Every structure is written in structure tokens, then in C-alpha cells.
Length: 190
Image 1 (cartoon, one colour):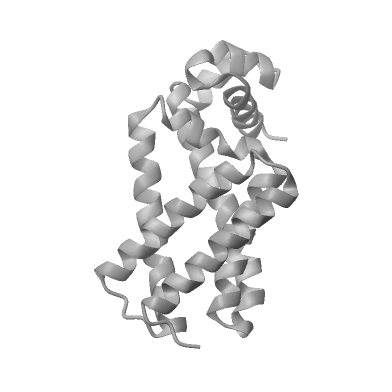
Image 2 (cartoon, rainbow, N blue to C red):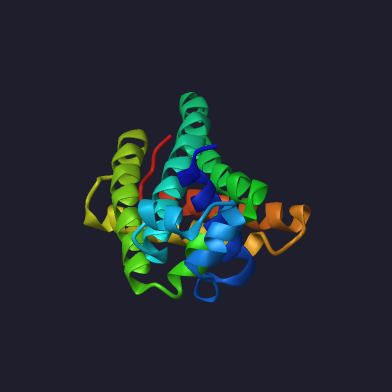
């Protein structure tokens, strides 16, 4: 494993365990099994590690969902909606420490803005995709709906992870059905 990846992995684990504010570069270096100077050679500060973690998580989410969405596409927008939400839940269920960005963003306002900006970009892309699949006009109202839906999904997934798998799956299923209903109200066609 590359040193850079070890540093990011160590930071992710420490943030998950202690919180962003409770760790220092020296803690990250010790967890990664490398010297503090090596960390500073790759990252200017703790926040730079956090941004690298943010980029990696975004790429992981995109890669994980892409395959599930592609498999669902022949079955229509309802299947794609289900696949997108379930994919995000399954990824976070398999590694709860992925939620470290949410935890850390509470201490880093700039990261909160970056996360929001990434969500807006992802929502615009998703809105264009769903507009083509459902026949809903890809206007600012629809893009805002998709952004709100994505943020709601993240919140519900975060909440669902607190429960046993059966209860969590019920919460996710309820959210899927609500999302499908809202898309139908907005004018989604089969």
C-alpha cells in the first residue's frame, strides 16, 4: 500500500474513532506507521488529508453506484432509484467509517462547503440523467429536488446505520418508496 493511502486510511480511522478535532498529524503518522515528516511531505496539514479523504470517498461512491445503476437501467427509473439508494446504504453499511467526512465537516466549515458543492454537481448530473429517464423537465426546480433528495438520502442512511439490519432496511425501503412517489408527483412516466 502506498504511503499516501496509509496516511489517508489512518486519518479516516482516527476521525471515526476520536473525531477530527481530537487528532493531530503525529497521531496520523503513528497510526500509519510512518514518520511525521513523511506526512508533511505529502500533506501541508491535517485539513489537506481531510480533503484527500473527501476526494477518495467521492470517487468510491461514484464507482460503487455506477455498476449498480448500469445493471438497473434496463428495468426503468424506479429500479434505478432503488439501486442508487441501496448502493449508497450498502457501501456505508460495509464500512461505517466512510461517514468520517460528515463527522469531520462539523469541525471544518470549508469542508462542509466543499461537500455541499460536490453534492450540487452530483445532483445536476443525476437530474439530467433522471430527466432523460422519466420525462421530467430538467429545470432548476427538479435539480433542487434531486439535491434535497440526495442530502435526505445521506441523512437517512446515516440514521439507518444506527439500527440493526432489519430495521435499517425498513427505513431505507420507506425512503425509496417516498422518493419514487415524489418523482411520480413531479411527473415521472414509466
